[in-house]
Structures are given as structure tokens and as C-alpha cells.
Image 1 (cartoon, rainbow, N blue to C red):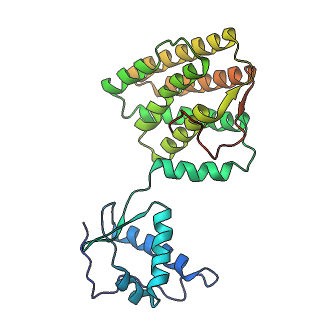
Image 2 (tube, rainbow, N blue to C red):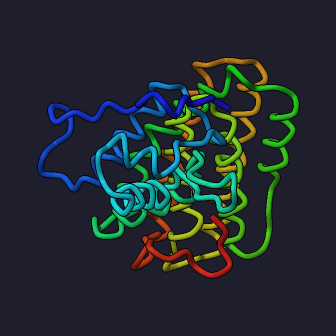
Image 3 (cartoon, helix red, strand yellow):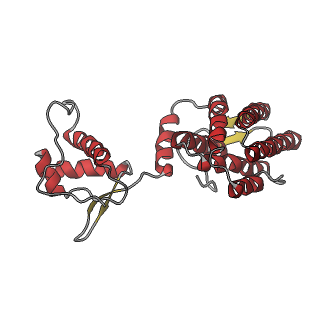
Length: 262
């Protein structure tokens, strides 16, 4: 944990670097975020107490509390009570970030085509990035996720998406990882099919399993070109099947459907 000298003003909020049209509490929140990056602070490090922040920014404690509350809502700060309490940095969770993005997209008329336009770009790059970190343990998990499944069609779809969730979590690129996880969450929780014919779903499953098995072979050989090619073909195939089965988005992606854990 970083040690802070309470006698030294660590913030330097001048009139020249704070937009005048924003609320003072918002300006302070942005300065705190900027300062944590400059200081190299990490989750678990404590921020200065309210009274120190109030003095450094030349404002009342109420304004500081409002700034800290904003950071708390963003998932960047937790407020601890007690003698050693106060604001403590925390790493925002994936769940919180995904909820905010879903709230934004809920009013953008998102459809299946939008998802697959993105998926056909993102998933091949995720897969190629995973080549650098692939090991026997990961290959075993992928093999378990691509086993042939029987039963309820939507449950089968969810199990097949687990293959991609495993890749996303293993991906060393955090931006690619987040995007892939978010797309998988949308497919798992908010895509429904109008005509779940057994024949159509069975073919969908067979094609998915075949692509997954080819991907595992390419990962084992660490063949980047083949990994990219197979994943691209897989995404185009999945797009075709989803469209043929009349997949569509739920009316709202604000609320997670019951029984689905994101």
C-alpha cells in the first residue's frame, strides 16, 4: 500500500485544468482518478481522508463526499467505516461495467446482425491472442466445453458459448477479453429463437462442435493462421445458423432474465 504524506498537497487542481462548466464534485472525482494513475495506486490502497481532500480542493466536506460517492457508484472506491475507515480503491467488476454498457445499448435497437458483425471481428483476434498462453490445462477445459450436448436447445446453446467464455477469460488482451465476454453474455442471456426446430438446432450443434474441435487442434499446434481462419469460419457459420433459426434479441437487455447468471 502506498504511503501518503498528509502534510503535502498531493492534488494540484488549478483553474486552468478543470473545466468550468462541470460540477465541482465531478471535477474532483476526475482529479482523484487522474492522481491514482499518476501515483501508481492499486486496488486496496487508501485515499486521503475527507478532511484532507476538502483542504486540498478548497471546498466543503459535502462536495468531497459527493465526489467520492460518484467514484463509489463507478465501482472505483469503497467506503470503509471505523477508525481506519475512509475511501479505499477497488477494481471495478466486469459485472458492473457490463451492466452500464447494457444500459447504454438498451436504447440503441441492438439486433443479432449487430452482434455478429462484431463477433466475426472480435472472436478470431481473441483466439489468436490465446495462442500465446495456451497450455494443457486450458486445452482440457476447452475439450470439456466442446463435448456434444443433448436436450433443451437453449441450454445447448449456452453450453456451446462456454467454449468462447473460456477463451475470453484466458485472453491476455483485456479489451478483447471484455468485448468477447460481453458478446457471449448477450448471446446467453438475451437471444431467443422463434422456431427452435430440432433439425436446425442439431445441425447448429454439430457445426459448432466440429469448429471447436478444429480450433483445439490448431491451438495444440500453436498455428495462428489456422486458429484465425477456423474461428472466422466458425463465426460465419454461427451467424448463418442463428439467422436461419430466426434468432432475435429480447425486448430489453436492461434486466438479466431469471435463471441466467452473467
